[in-house]
Image 1 (cartoon, rainbow, N blue to C red):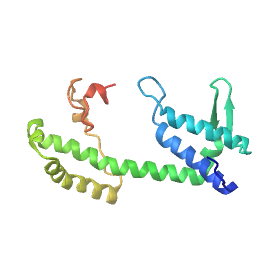
Image 2: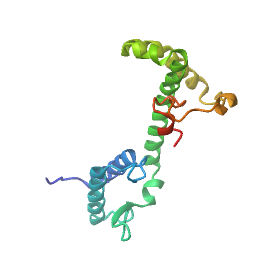
Image 3: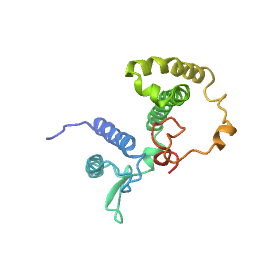
Length: 177
């Protein structure tokens, strides 16, 4: 397949690949336990090498030691890309935080046995007012009223107990790593 792109379209495509690679792989270390997406890495490498060939030399550099292309500081210093990343981070954080806090509070209100008997709709309907409470709180006060409860943070959590962050995972597989 041949893509006929203008210079501006190619630059936008390169930025999209960078942002997509960042979204898919930035949270992974690349270790055996936390692998990066090989398919996305391979495509990004191909696009980065082609972009370099097309004259985007200040945007990419090849590292002989790792045998791969890396974006340069150009992308980190690009204010438009920084805004996209910050907007994405903030939206994800403030979308996820009320959900996780609601799950935590929901688990404090109901036993596992009670929760297991509930339908998905019932669980959602019982969590909804809790989610809305946190959404209003963060909209009005952001994180200014967030406080760590020292008593609760000192309580010992068993490795096989549910993690107190609200993820639903066992403590040993979550915050207890």
